Length: 75
Image 1 (cartoon, helix red, strand yellow):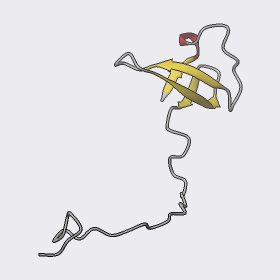
Image 2 (spheres, rainbow, N blue to C red):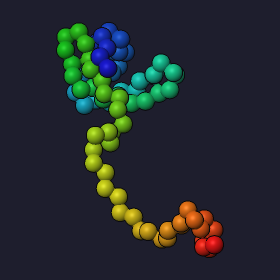
Image 3 (cartoon, rainbow, N blue to C red):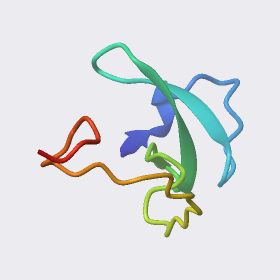
Image 4 (cartoon, rainbow, N blue to C red):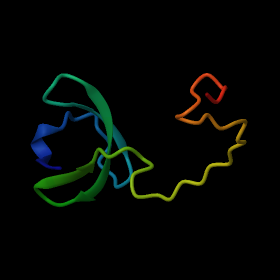
């Protein structure tokens, strides 16, 4: 999202990579990271930090339930 520089409070540190609190239109709050700064605008990235990353999980399979035997007993 791109906003005008004058929309930010004066206390916000204007440096790329800075995290700032943002209130969304529905009233929820999130954190956004400054990704670009120009003379008049600031570009913010409010995506979850794992967006676009590959995730690897290690799991232990403890059992399989058949849809034919939801209680563990075959008919």
